[in-house]
Length: 322
Image 1 (cartoon, rainbow, N blue to C red):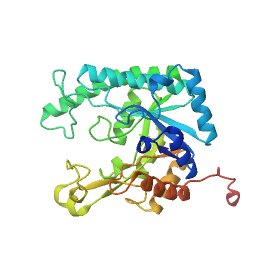
Image 2: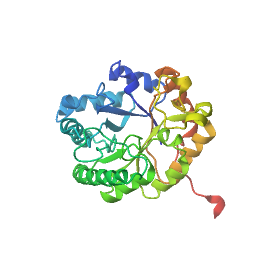
Image 3: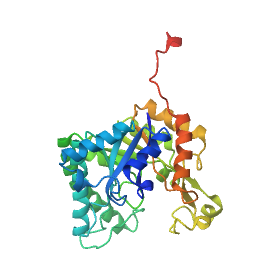
Image 4: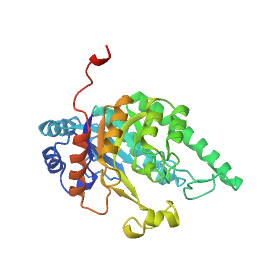
């Protein structure tokens, strides 16, 4: 299992400088954004797609720093009711899958997207309750849209030998494990989870049980190492569906935190152990979005904790059980 980093927080510096810094921390893998909300500071699709020379230079740079690419990231909304917005997100996703295949990277991370509540609506609609009944009807409509789209993408990904790892994210159609399993069952096994526990903690989902649930279906394609802290002083009054800005830290019910600042080291060791139990042996890709510290300090503290949590060797024979 590798300690990795999604390099977006280091987007203000060159990829070479970012790799030099991360390799100095002992990081083994990088997740490179190539479109959508994370941007493309370190991997411009137009520059690399179909360009064998540029791809060779990238591989040489990675080899020089002892790094591998765990995934390409393009988080956007291909189900958006605005046709131009959806088409742009769709092109980003398809090109990311193509580029991943060319780079011999087996995973692309992203979102499920979120449709409107009906064919005549203009904005996405996150539905969280089945009543009044028009909301249930709208939710059924959204799943029809999603299954049609993702069935096609699943076949496209399979043609390229690439897994698509969807981050379960509120304000997207797939935001929790049963929805992830539903989309996978409706498409194919190329569709799975980019398991990011930070969005599950504040929903009061048990993360290790969720890992077991999706892991038993071999549905975890990638993992984001990101923590969340629920602040009861606010959550006990207004609940956890919090629309205050992320920078209004004192007033929020929860915040994204660096690994170890929402849940302690013992918990993260349990997460790592449970991932091993279900057969996941990929990267723990740190996604820094902690507004209480700088990117570098947050990354460094997360790397330090995870390096103590990951297993560097494969299990030996259980000689004591013979």
